[in-house]
Length: 97
Length: 310
Image 1: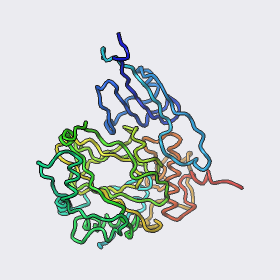
Image 2 (image 1 turned 90 degrees about the vertical axis):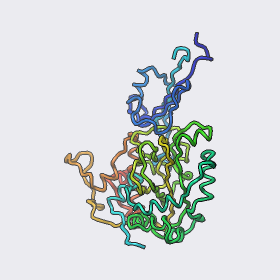
Image 3 (image 1 turned 180 degrees about the vertical axis):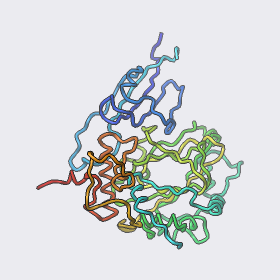
Image 4 (image 1 turned 120 degrees about the vertical axis):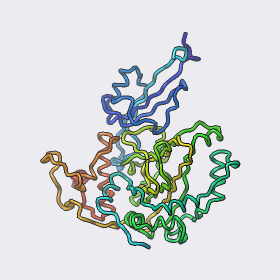
């Protein structure tokens, strides 16, 4: 029987080209709580999914999406961090993985 | 000083859009070898890991110690590899075109990417370096450049510097962007010995994973302008009519890839749909700054939002 001692979280972060989950992936990160894979910067050239929807279809659960924030006066044109960040998770049972 | 090979308008436009310029194999072998000799070696019995390697190599290396803010022309004694490097006509021409030859040296540093055995000695799992922007938040119009000198061949296995073309105008705080593991369009340096790349100070980058059994060296030199960077390059006849605009959106369907406006409005694979357009505005404003032409525009992106009546 899986319990908190055997369940582990995998986290997928997708950066999309707009606020829609149907938009294309422009950047991505993976963190594996099972310890099976050590993902690291620059380790992949191909995104794991083309869109956010594709990740949902593959069983990833959306747990956070970046809000749409009004541009403050005088700062409307400044670019910085990626705007459309989506956190997904999968819960993995180490007993069955 | 040798003859300067100034950057062309096309090269400057590439720098404005992408944030870097490359000179493959520009440094002759005898300079590369002299520089590698200057680095020196750490006897294998003294190898205790990465930090101890840096400490030992700094003690034995003959790479000059240069106080921050020293004029570049006074930074490297005649006869040294680094003096010969900056006096190559392509490199001195690029320095003059970007920051002026009267620029100041901020700092230089030998970046070493260590193979697996060094990580084992340091009892740390081997990892690539996170993506980052150097220094700190820097929203200036003036810009510094960083010379990336690769004195030996960099193979794919050696984990050459990863960089994100077109990321240089993003105002972020150094390693705050380390959450981004992979970015569409990221490039990895794989190059022959003697390659030099010159980065805009804001270009996002990070060291790769060295899966070879050799140390990988990158020597970085940060240069600061001492004056307004205004029309320093070799202005040529790039097809551009700065005083007139071309049809946009509804066009004749023909591509004009060498047109200045085309270079400045070419998207990168990682551009978001909306903020990618803001990068066009950043590039146009950068071009206004370096050209001194406050009316310059590419495909009406800035003119449109400046059309205000108060």
